[in-house]
Image 1 (tube, rainbow, N blue to C red):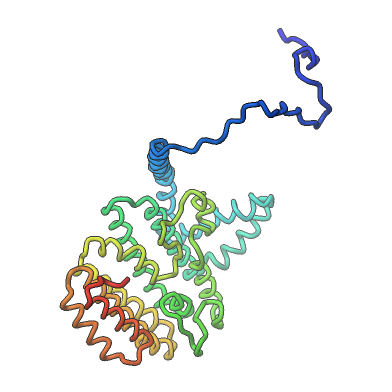
Image 2 (cartoon, helix red, strand yellow; image 1 turned 90 degrees about the horizontal axis):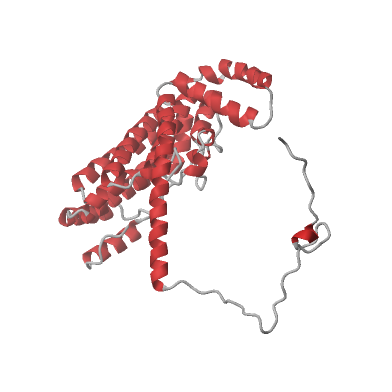
Length: 353
């Protein structure tokens, strides 16, 4: 049985009558009224709060780890082939650029037909999408990596990723010119940094391929579709740029080896890094870039490698290699910095980052 709604006058309930929109008057605070001042946390309460916050962070990471397992599976499946990557890209575009913007299904169908004829047959573009998916997966895994084993797994995946990126650059000359900008600050003309934007694009496919790798993967359409843009945060010092080879090595691949003081492992990684970046420089087919790379970048990487070897306990060999490198490159732009670093090491001040 339903009862009619009754309206009870507020006055009968003892509530003050106020006009619509008028705030209820506050109880006046007179001179004799007690005012309770804010009480700061005690040392014990602050310590307890810090512990609770730390536990909350751990619990949140576990929850996100469970949430991300299905998303990681989708990324792994999508990066398995060009066709899968392209179809997943279409799904993401449909949601982000059509459904969320109120466009009709017919609008998407018409756009999709055009994309299938153009970018769908562009192997370079689809390969670029696969690389972006691969690196997004690594970024998610790295955000959860806490143990040494997990960090090593991310590093191993990053090594494989950079090799795929290098091989891609060898096929796509213009992309190599864009990627070289992350390896060294130089250009075809003195003072002009090499980027994908300031070089004349000769092939539309290559231009699309370079754009597929550009920017922060956590801001990509894939991350937004999977809602990773808000739930994944790159670690302090971490990288989420799919095209920055130097950052990938310095922040994902080398740290686990430095922590273990694995001199042999670091030597192998640095050798691979020099080889891969050299292949990218060669793939640009710009003589000036290749020469600049050999003159500037290679000696800098070698000195950094010797620093790592010093930190891993091979001090005698590393010192001899540093001295030989400085002697052979007296006019290098970093030669003074190298000398300062070597002096610090000789004085026992420890390795210089």
